[in-house]
Length: 340
Ligand code: NAD
Ligand code: DAU
Image 1 (cartoon, rainbow, N blue to C red):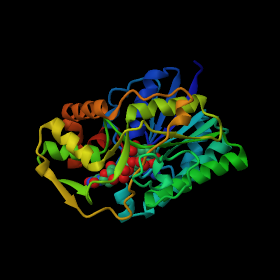
Image 2 (cartoon, helix red, strand yellow):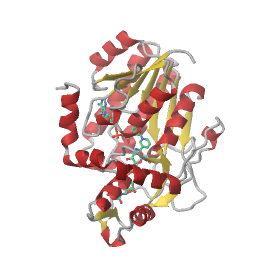
Image 3 (cartoon, rainbow, N blue to C red):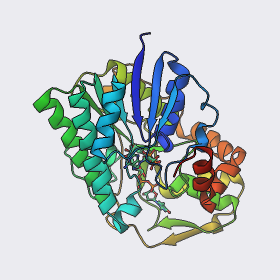
């Protein structure tokens, strides 16, 4: 295994954080740089166990800051960039779209320019199945890599815009890129504003659990550790310029997800509160993973085993999500890392 310098953006977030830990353990010869602005969604406490690892480095930067990003690339000469950093929550994009445009589109452009200028060997863009818009409830229809890009929310349209920029840097400048489009992730360190961790934490606190509309919308759930193995595979084996959809055929209605969690926790379904629907709420997402499977990828978890593992993790790590809900974690890790 050769040495390599890998820049992971958004490595203090949910998926980027899991990926950083996965890479540190799997590739001791790789230097892993976690670049993160530490927005409300960034949390470094999750990395306390890898802080002393010889191959882990943290960089507190904003991907939209061109000068600072260029300086970093000039100093470090990265081999690979794995780009997770983004504003990721659909509901927030409906309330305040501006930061989604800035971070997800402009930030990606800043990184593409730096990657081109400093001859990065691979730019991995972590995108989402939401760029394809929505499917109807016909269970035989799936998103493939050639499905039209038809995003419906400010979040998904900002991600789609960034995907198009990544494509352009391959087509125009020959920058070696891959785009991955994954379905909904769940697992350890999922930020408790999202459906699954919110349901677990509210159920444990015996609070009402909001379900949008009638809970009929369908998402295709993938355990975050399976997403990490897929990204690793594409990083090393992906064909330059290619898009890979990632998903494990785990479609569930939102109501089924909430009912499953309540059952496992032994809580009453009376906690469920049906509330107004999300604006522009996509009906159904479902991935056809044939292309990534042909590279040799196979998920370890199905939803039934993954959700039990995840609930267990939230039970064992109550301090982590309670701190986040109390807003204490920002202050704690700022002190820990001597950040402004
Ligand atoms: P997250 O919101 O948990 O984490 C995002 C991270 O990016 C945070 O640590 C945040 O501090 C950082 N960040 C935000 N703006 C930044 C900036 N300007 N500069 C530097 N860092 C910044 O997100 P997530 O759920 O882990 O998603 C990661 C990526 O994966 C996103 O690009 C998202 O679109 C994509 N994705 C997410 C899912 C999912 O189910 N969560 C599924 C498919 C794809
Ligand atoms: O499909 C991949 C996407 O999955 C990622 O690109 C996004 O970054 C990620 O946030 C996720 O988007 P969703 O909007 O699907 O995830 P969320 O957890 O917000 O919602 C899941 C479903 O649950 C969705 O249909 C809306 C519904 N929901 C959500 C919340 C927060 C509720 O019914 N009640 C809620 O309180």
